[in-house]
Image (cartoon, rainbow, N blue to C red):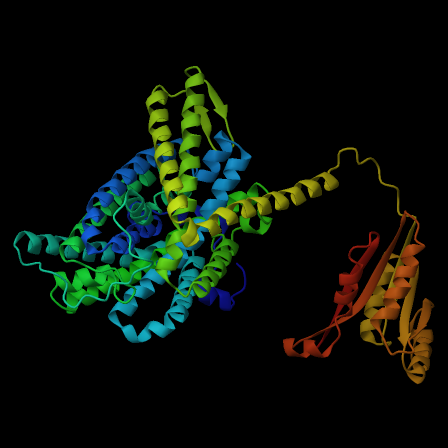
Length: 628
């Protein structure tokens, strides 16, 4: 068991590798962990549709209802497609793995880049939207929205660092609280609508026009549709995190996906219909959800406050979906050598802590840059995830085609799964192919309609990220070739081993370093930089009596420099070194008991290592001498 520390108090005691099976989750907690992003999007998807329709005036708001039906149809297509993916890839079938195994490396990297960006934007949009709900109830905190959002991100980060199971239990309460309150709000709204007592929103906020007034055109409807598709951006999360579920993984994950889709589709249709009936106005000053709640519950009473609280918490907690999937995806990409290897290592709580930390920092940067504005962040949001949708579904369609080419009973082991003959391969290929076609159209619509609003940033960033992946991979491939033992042959024996011992004085630390150096070789040279002649004479006398007869070289330093003369001496030796010789620089290093005392001592070894590290055949060794 590792020793106790402040980290144990903050994120919990370390978990052993054997604890991994006990950290898996069931369907109920799985819905909270992986569906909070998709469910929370119902809190802003309707508003984002109305923001665009507002350019044609309030008379265009009735288009929000058929647009919502179109989005629900798209949700059904995606659900059916990803349900097949979950069963085909029981060890995790995100867009990256599916594209890698069925289309190729480049499409996989594009999908990975798109999804990683989407997860960052999920955190930024969800937290910013949650803060917007707080502002709706308490307008006085508007100037502090960025600070509140950043604090929320770091709180979610801390909870996730405690582990998947613990974070799932923590977030299940707000998730189900939100589902309950939205259910009460929508049902109450429909009851009041059918009884003729619903009415319109009282004192609606002033409508904000994000651009010049426009007529109702097909292009405007497409823009509103693309904004509303933010409601389906979390559908792929469950297929990415299958390994977090208890056995049978695929069955539990697939059922969770169906639950999520039914709840999401019902809420989106209900909220959009009621928002139109009460004549809600899209505004950053007060959200559509706030207007709906105070109209349905007739004022800002207990149920209104509970609805706003539930919406605020779920929007902030929705970022948890990204915190669950971003580290897993970055670990997969890192395992393939396209991200730093450190992202593939689990932390003390069996989570990919480096991925969690990186996601937090990048998301906070976006929140600060865009001042926690949901409307400013939304244009960057969905294009990446729809690109990954398209590549994933295209990959699955090709997988079913490959399955149809096999004979019954024949199997092919691929990197991400085992490919078998499937008797229903043709209709499954049609389902995934139609899903790819549909999401590709939505992606192009989004890219065109949102290009000027900021989608161009994602279009540029995606190839840049892919290029970065390839550069990282090229480094790892080159390093592997250089370290390979093929054609390595037999290395010549070391002909000479010299030890250079820099000393500032003759004391117990110096003698400890000398004792260690003697274990390496008898070819030892002590080196002293002379700044004070009298001090140098005293050192020489001490060395004659304590230096055990080893050489002492005095380097004159008229400019009172210490490191530079030693470096010049070592470099001169290295230039004359034969190929089968090695030089070891043994540095005595004081280690005070109190950490603050460390600032009072020079870190000579660090400086030498930094300068000489690129020189082959030179080794820097510290010999610690602990001072009580």
